[in-house]
Image 1 (cartoon, helix red, strand yellow):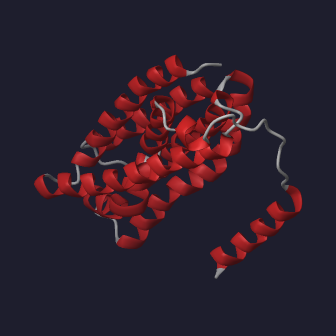
Image 2 (cartoon, rainbow, N blue to C red):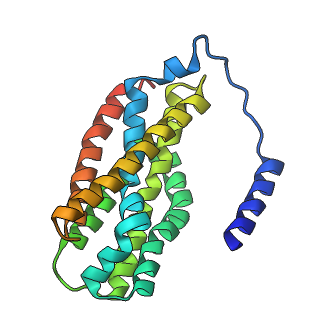
Length: 219
């Protein structure tokens, strides 16, 4: 009920304050223009930057923390939820800094934050609850840089921004489902310690693909 109430409040605020921007009409089919390598790379970036949300925040985070720290379910769920709190706090901060320094630079920084946190989680050392609080908040901060993919998409084709973002979101959510099922398959053949190592590989892949996205940026 609280979530629904907050959602209704934000819907009313949006309805009262948002308006459409004037944009040039696309000369060709928006769908055909959006189905290109640039959109695929952008959708991949959205999925990879959100990998901790898909894997730790939504499915396996509680079990991972219970295995790693011997914490109970309630404590583990609290730490998993910190990813979302970190996203909420960091998103406007990252956006403000990106306006000054550039979107792609902040996305790179987000990847390095996520790599650092994943390496820490892969260690066998016993960490304090305060340290896990910081780590999961930082994971949320790294994930928040996925919001910066959308303005990059807008800059690429400002005549069809809605179609661009919608197609990138379809790719992002489809790959998110694959990340969740793929993590489940990994856990069948290994322990929960495999999760941070899988995340490290995901973020290194994202950094490599980000260079390709930059190379395809026409602006």
